Image 1 (cartoon, rainbow, N blue to C red):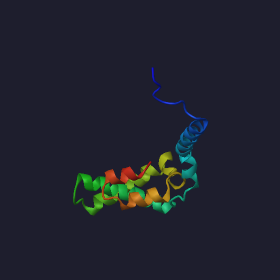
Image 2 (cartoon, rainbow, N blue to C red):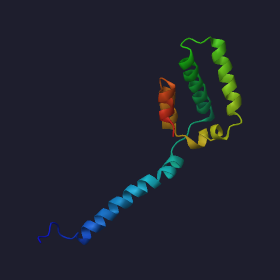
Image 3 (cartoon, one colour):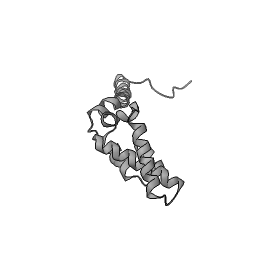
Image 4 (tube, rainbow, N blue to C red):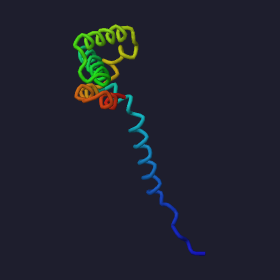
Length: 115
């Protein structure tokens, strides 16, 4: 019976292993890259919260009264003040993610910007 392929050479095996290890290293280094990236300020995190509330309120009512918007933002700030996830914002999110979310045109786009 004829041979369809020759056995892999040592160089091919080493090259394949290096490619797999590089890809694995890239994936596993995400937390390290995140911690080394620039992070948003507390003010930017507060602006993110306000922007998200605006998106949610506008999704429910195209033209909400200013008082409703202000009330919802106040409620969100109160809830966020005791939320450990929100407290992580200045150390967990990156500036790029925050800027993306602030540029978002709706809640769906906003959420896609964040991890």
